[in-house]
Image 1 (cartoon, rainbow, N blue to C red):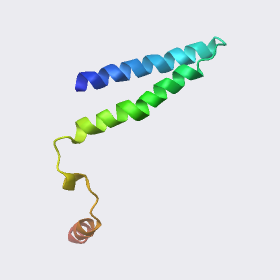
Image 2 (cartoon, rainbow, N blue to C red):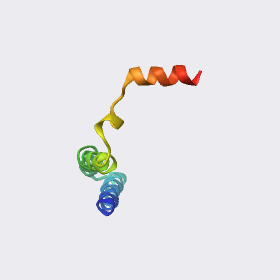
Image 3 (tube, rainbow, N blue to C red):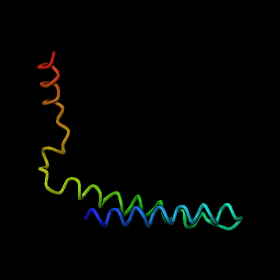
Length: 76
């Protein structure tokens, strides 16, 4: 999974830089930049979150305000 994420980061960086290169040369590079940003938002981020939290319990990911209040009062 780590190699897939690194490969996606490289592809996305190439797409975005290619778009800026075209834009600086007077061509329409907005399409390539947009494709790169969409890949970041809809492919890279969900894959990263899945790989980061796949072996963790749901309780570790949840925000529990009552336990946080207890920790804050214990620290004081």
